[in-house]
Length: 271
Image (tube, rainbow, N blue to C red; front, side, top):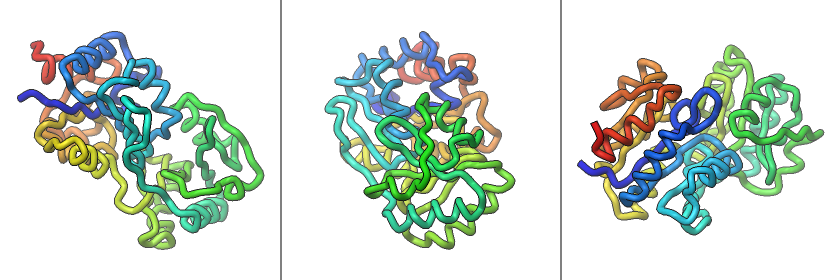
């Protein structure tokens, strides 16, 4: 079957351990675009962390989308416009920041340039900034700088502290937002029901496509729902056994051109 949409997770999938996209993966994506395949960069990253990668892949002006903030925002690369989004309200954001402060954990969000946080020296804040290739700005009172609802805010920290805090925070948030993990050290707070899979379903509807036309490649636990809706679900070789268990096929690791191999085999028809 010819898959007409290709959704790619970024960290641990499209990018290797050095946060780079290899020449082979770039060539495979370009060839897929030339065949008319719609390429979707699907990530928990903010737009700030995806757009430079989209530019480097030559996606702007072409049939491609950025699915940012773990699915809270869909941006057309062809028109460089937001086509769909869901946001976390100010009351919920204040609750999240207050909760983090009480627990001694770092909270963060984003401005037009990078990460903003009250704990700029926290190692997990630095990890988030590194993952996205963006700077950190320390501020005195984070919530005072948030003027409107946001696609996503985060609490980051040592997993042994962060993981048990999620259920407590979710009780406080109720139906106003969801708290979930992209990594054990990254708790992401988004609007209720926001997931990569839900946003992909929105995009499929907007484009008049069905799930069988979608190929998904991912490696993380937050990729499992979008793997579950795909016509072809491809897990990276560096994925956990749990993620691999939700895939149809397993490709090579992110350090061994796993994305390129999957595109070459299942879209370009190369054995």
